[in-house]
Image (cartoon, rainbow, N blue to C red; front, side, top):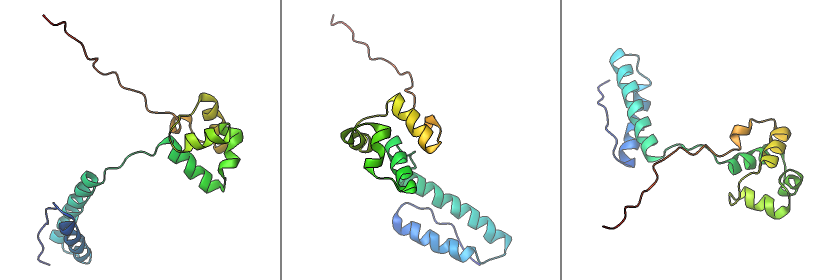
Length: 132
């Protein structure tokens, strides 16, 4: 199969690249398999640049767990506090207290690290210079 690689700079080229990959997947030639691997890497690089992955927020994790366990917001009141606190936490407006993290950990048997915000890295502090 005569195929060249497609450098992807747009969604139209991405679609063409997917068609090429589909064609190359049916070939058993060594050169086509090398092109297939290279094109797949180009597709992955474009997609990662355009749609970067991000870890889910603690609120998204709890929403997912609620869905998987068939729980409602009312079911979360004993774990998270008042109905308004449940709402604030699930909307991402408020973070989890350590008590909430412990209760969620016990209820869903998940690591606490999933519910805690990532540690803040030490950064440079802005310094002010006195006007001379």
